[in-house]
Length: 246
Image (tube, rainbow, N blue to C red; front, top):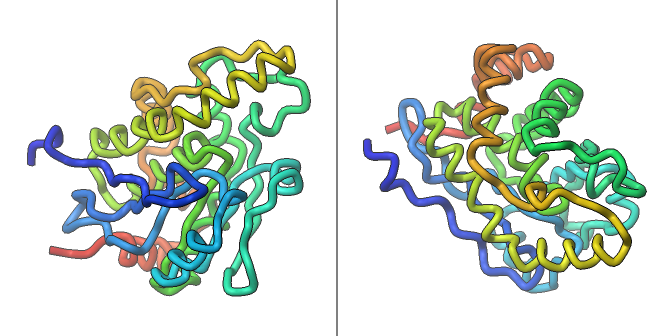
C-alpha cells in the first residue's frame, strides 16, 4: 500500500474544539482501525450545546482528560451528567507550568519523559477503554498534540498502523491548531515567557525520535503496555476494539 495516499482524519466541525478527530480508517495489522470508536481532541472546555449533542448522538459519552490537575481546575471540560469523565493527569511542562521556567528544549524530550514517567496513566487509559466494551470514547489534553499525540501513537502502534501513518496523524495538529497557537504565543509573550517556537509545532522528526526511544526501550507499543501492567487478555480485547478485520 502506498502510504503517501493515506489521508489523515479531518477534524470534526465543532463550535469549540479544533482538533477533535477520529482515529478510525487507518490501515492496521489484519485490517483497518475502527471508525467511530476512539477519538482524540484538544481541550473540551469550549464545547457548545451543539458540540455535546453531536458527541451524544455518536455515542462519545466517555471522556479521558490527560491534562494536569491545575489545567483541569482552571478550564474544566464543559460536560454534563450524560458523560462519563476520567481524570488521568499528566504534565506537559508548558500548559502545566506556573512560570515557563521548566520547558523542554525539544518536543521529543517531553514525549520521552511522558513515556518514561506516566506508565500508570497509560495503564489506566488502556483499562478504561477496555471497560467501555466497544462503546466510543475521546481522550484529550490542552491542544490535542503532545500528551494526546503520544497516546494516539501508542494506540495506533498497538493496532499495527504503519509508522508513516502514525507520523502523518501526529503532524496535522500543528495546522489544525494554528489559530489557537497564534493566540497562545501572544499571551505568553505578554506574560514575559520565552517559549521556543518549536513547542507550538508538530514536526515529524520529534515523533520519530519518540518512537525510536519506545522501540529501543520496550520493543513495541504492545510491550510498553505490558510493562505498564496491562494484562494480555486486556490487550487482546483492546486490539479487538481498535481494529476491524478484513
